[in-house]
Length: 141
Ligand SMILES: Cc1cc2nc3c(=O)[nH]c(=O)nc-3n(C[C@H](O)[C@H](O)[C@H](O)COP(=O)(O)O)c2cc1C
Ligand SMILES: Nc1ncnc2c1ncn2[C@@H]1O[C@H](COP(=O)(O)OP(=O)(O)OP(=O)(O)O)[C@@H](O)[C@H]1O
Image 1 (cartoon, rainbow, N blue to C red):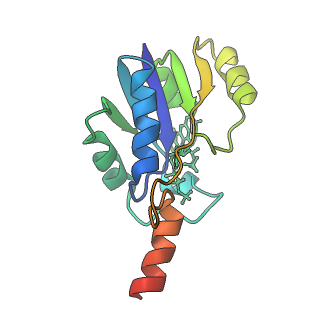
Image 2 (cartoon, protein in one colour; image 1 turned 45 degrees about the vertical axis):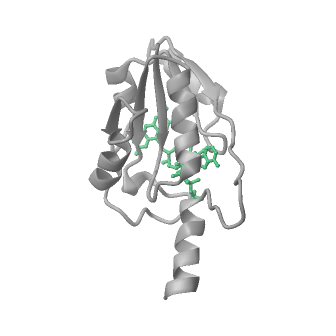
Image 3 (cartoon, helix red, strand yellow; image 1 turned 90 degrees about the horizontal axis):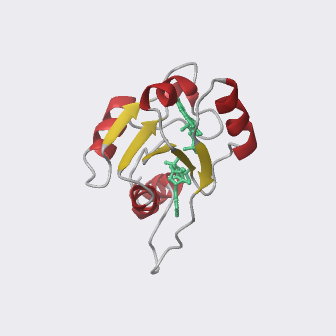
């Protein structure tokens, strides 16, 4: 089974590791698609360049391959990877049924599932790139 996870992954944190571990446990191969900075429009643009984010995710032991996302069509990397499961992040804005419909239209046989959320375990632990950046600005700038 080949599983795909996707996201921005600007500054890595334990929530990302939880998402990747869950994806890897669902199959044998975990592929991660790194969103292009130009496509991150629903929140602040990533601080780090696309390739740096790809290289950091690709170095993790549970990730078999990290791929730069396509700039225009998010289904191009999916067609190339040909996964059995697309694992959406717990808070990703994408709708399961919209993705399933787009996959069916393209003849891609793949299920869409939703990952669980990991809660912070101790005081001060942060599971959000945006919140890490905010803390840096508050405490260091
Ligand atoms: C199945 C799937 C494939 C995706 N492929 C790409 C892609 O090729 N290029 C890209 O820039 N974003 C892609 N995305 C979108 C991002 O991964 C992501 O949802 C968004 O841009 C970043 O915000 P988020 O990490 O808060 O979800 C894909 C999303 C999904 C669900
Ligand atoms: N605490 C968490 N538990 C499980 N998955 C998480 C957690 N935090 C983030 N993820 C998942 O990691 C993926 C990538 O997250 P992304 O880098 O886009 O944003 P983020 O880390 O949530 O930060 P921000 O708050 O800035 O959006 C998303 O699919 C998200 O659901």
